[in-house]
Length: 251
Image 1: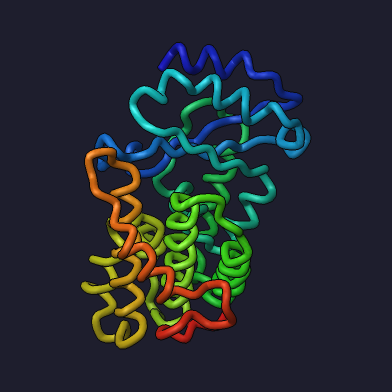
Image 2: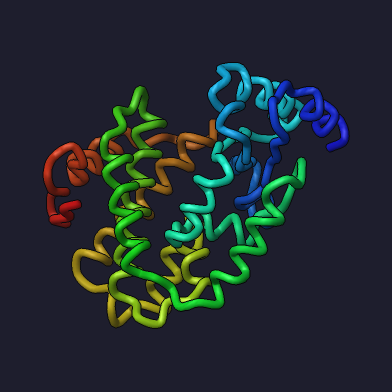
């Protein structure tokens, strides 16, 4: 830990930056195949530098021996916009994330979030934001099977999250957080939304869980990756078309 922080202190930046640790490893729920997830909060002037994120990745190399390190980058204002839009990913980080390096922005964001979460949840604003995210992920062209599986996972996650904001009237903060945690989405939908989630939504949830299995198979060298099931899911989830076949999702 100290070695990594020393490495991060030597990263060249025009303004202070910080790393926020979140995800299953941070919650103590991960296994050997789980990633280490970090949010890099940095000034846009630093993010525009081609070597900035590369330097941070190099600084995190001692952690790579334990698992893959994923870095998500955001500037202060951009992350606050996501937070105000009730983006589940941002809310997850605000609620459960912990500072790993630096303390310039996150404490201020947390204070703002503590005030915002006392107000009624703006489901319409959240839905508009998630529709934009859906279109963003739909426009990504995967370069390999791993990216294809991750893209499917993200698209299915965003759809389920948007359904939740549109159909659950008494939605709580804990539910928004859980909708961004893969292991909790299925149990939450089946336990809390058993009356509301029917038909296509339940079918979509089952497909989402199938994609999670494929993702885990790809991460584990001891698992057999089912190419046949992967192709079946791609055939079912035709994201490149106007609608997803069977589920008739049109964003």
